[in-house]
Image 1 (cartoon, rainbow, N blue to C red):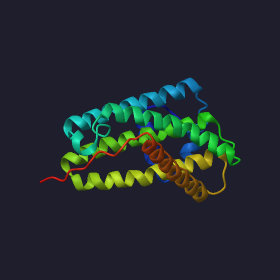
Image 2 (cartoon, rainbow, N blue to C red):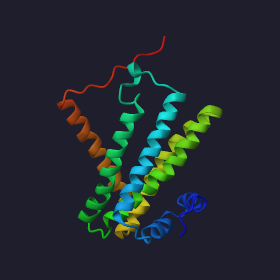
Image 3 (cartoon, one colour):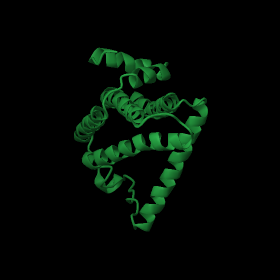
Image 4 (cartoon, one colour):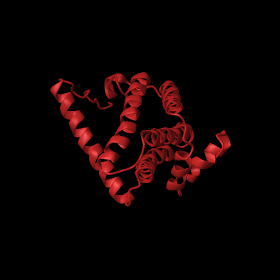
Length: 199
């Protein structure tokens, strides 16, 4: 495996039809833990930069979407926290269910997903200018791609037998997490920003 832009782009495309093969190739690199955390920080920063660019091209009204959604910097911080938590979640929860994956495998999974979504986000930004309809389709497709990559990489990392069961578990844990966070925000007195319809 070569860590070159063209080769990595080809692997990113290969991830869709052959996610477990790509996962094995990446896991076999045996990169140092410090390198993996640095790579995760790098892709998060680049993604935040794309968010800033998108905010400059298509500014959002904070009164309509809330101060968090209108701030690329805050979104970047939230995304970084989510990616860090996701890496630990893949490792810890997988181990709880008898998996054999390592924390390094979990970090690689998150880094690779973030790398792929950097390309998807760049494509979506470009399509928003020239073909808004295709941009919306791309955004929807990216959700399915997220679960596709996460499920297969987690299955390969931990040595689970069924990707379908891994997908169902991931979906269930995410739903529980959303409910738990929503309940916590309610306890803290945080209310959703009021939405105003255009005249």
